[in-house]
Image (tube, rainbow, N blue to C red; front, side, top):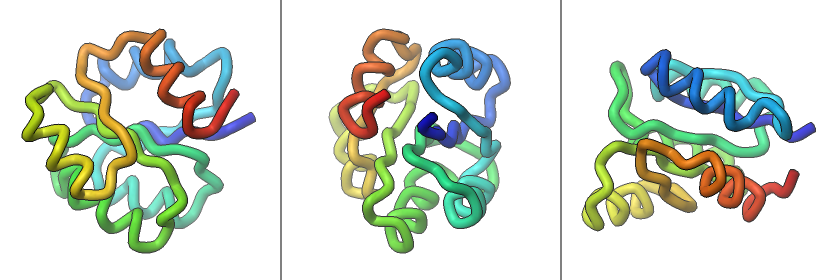
Length: 118
């Protein structure tokens, strides 16, 4: 089963993501960008769902660092900021795609399948 790293500091958002992912994917959690980098280095991760606004290190910085070591690892930005400038900044940081919160389970699963299948 494919494994997704959910990088999310908010407990309720993380619980929502586990509800969406639980049938088709394994998942693990990082609560900030620094943890996400460490987990991407240490675990066998197939895709990263990356919150943008987090403590210690934001999602843009973490994505750039993850992509330096793992350029093939898909990273999908998750953010409440849905402006075109936010989308552009996420893509420039190295994110492969962008989902705005609140996340639709159907849209989320379709996007994950696009990158790693089921």
